[in-house]
Image (cartoon, rainbow, N blue to C red; front, side, top):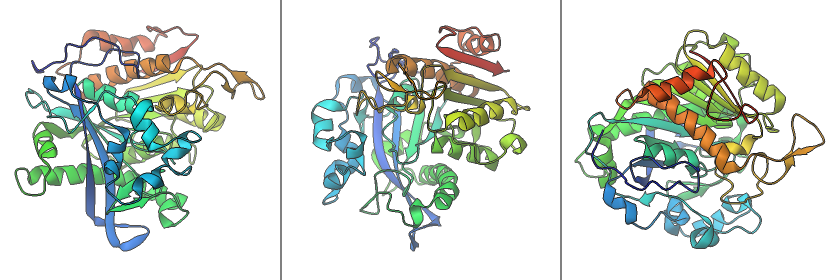
Length: 408
């Protein structure tokens, strides 16, 4: 796709897999949808603090890596770092965790802040939208977002105000406070709209390229990004969000990946969209969505009768397997750590599969799936065969550790 490739073949300490051919850049932008209002203040538009990971130029490789505080605007809003340190915000990922500690020794990532985008492309970069879980944060999934960017995707992840444990919009810090933004009905209604708003806002910015007010990195990136070739992905409440976006049947959405989705709220076997290529990922020991959630997700795959569908299930995985929370706390729980409460054997514990191995499984199948449906320019027979083999229970991982089945 481009000659501007990364020659570093070392495995990522986050995924256990080699990063792709492209160094990774990351940038933050606040997107505003003037056609929507803030549930907390109807006089204000809906604003979304949004992170974008993207392929960057080769010279990025040796540049200083992104700091955690960069996700917080470097503390430009007075008191914002103190708010982030609260046990109800970023500090809640581990007792006593602070942004200073994350910056100094804890946070690890491969991205470079505001790196020059790689614009030496043939086909424009496809887009992967990502929706975070309830009470989570857009940066807590870098095992997935950075990995995909290194393989030629522009990965776009907004915070959902009122649902994110911390975000900044309109010069203010917002955390869940029990107000209108944080009511379940509001979050369930607004989250899918947020994902469409992100696409709409980026397309509006594309029309304004080379004009005042469009950040240079965004301006450059949008010139080589295909906003009509998009996958919707999400974890937990974000998986619910992705399922709801599929029901909107937006023609820009070409594929979907739902990770431990919370889709047990209704009978989704009677949904409208049963054709968009679909991958559902689960942790067998997930005690958050639990048996009813895992069963609903499996039925969701089985009832996807008009299009390709795949199920990827980590046997010794849990809910938090689909996050990067091990960076915050090696014993975070529910799929991360030395011992976790078991779903399949109530009252007992199990030893989760090493989280780096779990992320390797997720990324192996996730990348093959996305390349198959979004990147025909790089699609290869081996990746397609990986998905086809799943229909026969074949694959590169032990069947004792990973269950994969497909309808292709």
